[in-house]
Length: 117
Image (cartoon, rainbow, N blue to C red; front, side, top):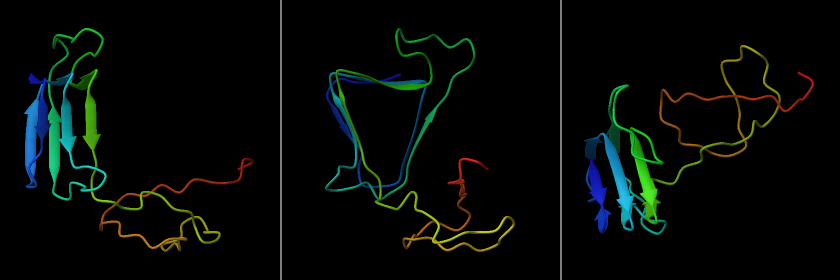
């Protein structure tokens, strides 16, 4: 259990945290801000097993917030955009309306805009 009742601010370094629960109670968990996004790698692993004890109201393997502030801002990026035209099934290339910088190996989902399809 990581219990935050004050303010926990992630340093600007790559960081990994593992916990069964993270409970922010009346405090603040800050991983970057809107004005200064967190551009490093932060990995939070929540672990447990089927018989883990539930935190009342919140459950298990959870980042729980009770009267708190969660301020989590990562590197700005375009998460979604629209196709710049029709793409045939099986196509190996697409053109999108905005310039993107998705990392190699990223998975994308293309959804239809035709309600009849």
